View (cartoon, rainbow, N blue to C red):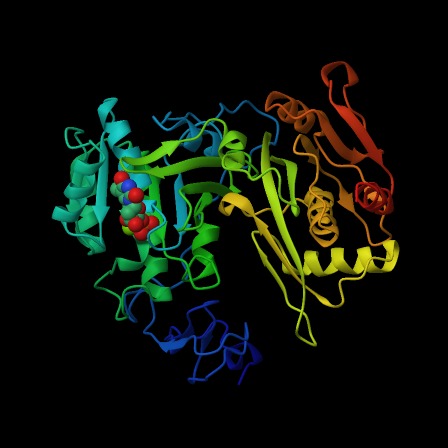
Length: 468
Ligand code: TYD
Ligand code: MG
């Protein structure tokens, strides 16, 4: 037997998928409890092949057509944009929806995905664009109820409760020129050619592929809602995230009204911008000044809180970091963190112990980012350290001071990006002083705060200890 055939390359019979990992899409001939490719447990289910049926002739190699090769230089217009009526969404997408593009939006159940997309569809429809909304999760009555609550009943959105992919594609073809197509959600769709349950790899992949092809042909912006798994990733195959042009996450804490829309992939714009919304009685309201929102209700007199002057994308965001350091009755004290990386907290505590001689060994440490915001910027280190030290020594920090700066393992305070932007935002909100890295340039003419420039974490520890 030739080697190629034994490896399955160039075989005459098309390979029939057997067991497919729902996490990574790897195909195996036998069921197993653990996927050999990605190591995920309990992720393998039986599926039949999503490819063309045997004997249809499609798998036969056809002679290729010579394609025209282009040079890199050449004039290409900027992607045209459809401005939505939601400025925060325009900011995250990089200026509005791109016709013919596909966008995936993920988020936990109940976070407000359907609400956001209904508001988006209604806004576009009111501006004379044709917007279609296919709900696979809710009945027409439920969507209508939401529309009534949002005051959007009069918007001429085309609404259907449908899960059959073929029916949706036929409706799209019939509808002619459409600006926006919303699919809520991609996991509920099923193509009858595929013998697998809705939400499985082959169904989700086939549905996404057909819809994207359709949207590209029609020049419609396609918005897909994706479920998330319990660890916060969009459920289904990663390949869907690769197929779409942009992936947005809608996050927030259900106990808080704030919702953050974040781009993690964007072929047409930046990936570091966030949109901030507030879930109110009448739907999602845009928040133009997030700092004021995140600092509202701040308890300025208690020890253990520090204000971090952060930057999300190009926008400054001030947020309160809260720490509680309390004597622990346990042999192995607890460290818990909400809104920040737990490893980063462990690292910070280790640096405080090793470089500043401050021990947390007999204390439980809790750290919380107020307002349900998740922070991934390294510059938050200094604010977190200030909150920890303040709580440990039971000394309240000045209520009009902000902190930012990355801390290295040696305890050195390293420069942060956009330092002037951070300081100007603090100034605008009435802060009068800031603790920040010695390194890094700032526009001194624009900043009137009292600055404490730090080179080492120890200087901050000494300042807080001397207030005792
Ligand atoms: P929804 O958009 O259905 O979430 P998802 O599609 O992400 O699952 O939002 C549901 C939540 O939002 C629900 O808990 C109620 C709340 N909500 C409001 O607070 N105000 C409103 O005007 C609407 C429509 C929903
Ligand atoms: Mg929903």
